[in-house]
Length: 235
Ligand SMILES: Nc1ncnc2c1ncn2[C@@H]1O[C@H](COP(=O)(O)OP(=O)(O)OP(=O)(O)O)[C@@H](O)[C@H]1O
Image (cartoon, rainbow, N blue to C red; front, top):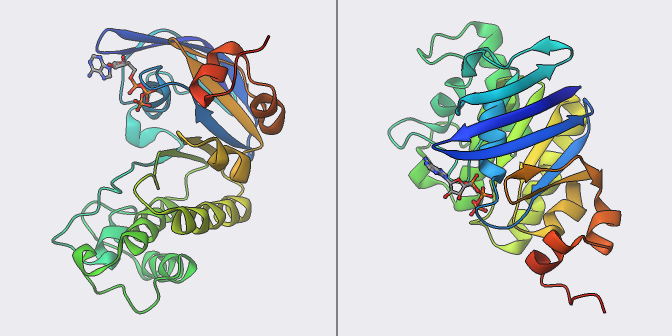
């Protein structure tokens, strides 16, 4: 379980509060208005922002002050952060060892990840020689090989068209189920939440609220979410 206990994250003076738990192996969408603090929330859990107060616990162990690389977290951003001068294979290998010194077992894991995301035969290409969807797959393979139990995606597929995005969400769903990882995915699109998330963490006005079942929250949104979703005001 991921526990955020009276947590306050400081992102350059912007404060985000969270007091909630996320069940291991479940899938959460993080949604809410622009600027509300969604990226701050997952950046804080990943160790990219200082913690002003409170605690972050994973499976009962305190990780509040752990270095980012020592946390149980793999993170994927919108642009995927692929290095243009490296092959797809090398980009994925970086997920295992920044110096690209891989054991035969590691190389086998990379080959399996490439296969698993549907890029078999394209491992020697540079990112520029891949389509946008294929680049997303390569970036996903890189977080996969890290084998971390907490997978955090920050609007990873926002640049893709609707059909490709749906494909990628389904792929993430399958991979997360297979690995048993816990997923936190920031998205602006409620349809993404419905497609993949068991529960939604609503972030509004600097507060990350405890998770609520996706359909219940989206079918009957609270005022903070209602305006954002463009839902009509209640009479
Ligand atoms: N480096 C920074 N220094 C100061 N304030 C920042 C910094 N980065 C972000 N902020 C502020 O923190 C607040 C939350 O930003 P954050 O990126 O977490 O929101 P968000 O909900 O992810 O927004 P969006 O949906 O637009 O990506 C915003 O008001 C933003 O202006």
